[in-house]
Image (tube, rainbow over the protein chains, first blue to last red):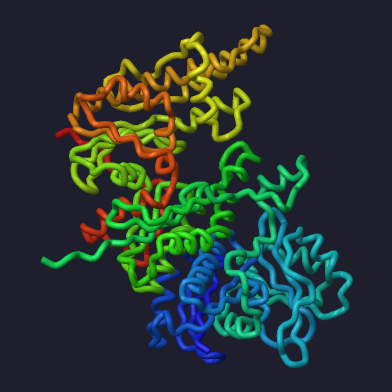
Length: 240
Length: 342
């Protein structure tokens, strides 16, 4: 199966082509701000290096979030349009699961997180099962770091935190959970991780409804919903 | 003589709160023009919230593209190019249309054409009547108030610009003061026809010898008037406020447009952008400028943001082989160059 994988959920960009588990070509940038400029040239490059035409792709894998809202929209819009216009499979994978997969089979629970500012994080809890496949223990969520640590108190397993260690969380985590926790400095999605998870993920059936996992309402909607009853059936967008 | 194939362009527009995809033939014929508007969503907040707008675009983009191709009965192999608005506008919104257009252009090996949203508004007129050069364009919308000289196909220069609020923005702000739902233009235009000009708000910058506009002073005058009336418990006639406000705005727009035509004679005046739908503006310009110049008001559906206008301008860029590559980025503050003295 010919795969194209992309992750633009945070500052790093990872784009890769692969044939099943065999990585063919990759483009990675560690710390850049213009995924909108670099993404499509990178896609073009890895597909060319594989010797493919766009039509030769079978499946598009995209990191669906959480992460930077703008970054996610760049990746998700590109992936869903490619899948739709070429009639190819689309799968979404968790941007946090990609970090856990980077670490590889490990004992205990893996806690990948992204800094969401103001002492908040995006975080999930994962573990590798006996077949060395990554499993979700706690779904990705947006929450205060303090709340996450409280929830983790209930877990009687070795914990390994995976994030960009430049974020200033270590002391708070150790204070809360003790010095037994491990830390892994990792924030760059590896193409192999995207591919492994992308091969396991379920194919999206409704491309239209495929949107980033923001895990957070916009500020405007949060405030609005405090004073209004949210009618989920409201159609806020209409064809005219 | 060989007959030429029609130039079909698939165009994307997502610069603000409308997701639109169109197929336009030879820059003249609309084969489809799908518009999904988010007005109902943003009415909750009294104006466009950028993050909410960007999210809606992602939800709508495939639906709109699918309908546009279906309605046009066009297959990818019949397309000559893919065009997209790359600015000005809200960056998060622009990026959705931009990435979608790049994906389709790459997937089907079609040239990509980045279009200035304002060029699109102006070339909406070309869908109604062939443009004659040089032409003058009055671009009036929620984000822009500009007098633009179009000296040749694709050659734009700004003669005058707003120093503060755009005219559509002024309508929305005054509308909010009067308790009118966003977007307020239509209701205020209607009220303006039913009231009297009793408040006589100040005409900003009419005396100044330039082609620029200012609307924040009028807005302040309306605020002060309403505030004062509230303090002394005097009744406010909203329709009279609307009439006074609209007369003020139209005096400024019409006077500056006439001045621009005197300095840069043109055979055609194109009125473009969402505020071109204003019936008061249409009446005044028609009464005061015809038959000296030919006035082109695009039909209402083409005044607001839509992708057909992007396809209309893209045909010019296509003829000039003015293509973009896959590194094309959104430029939220994209603008034309200013006219230099010649």
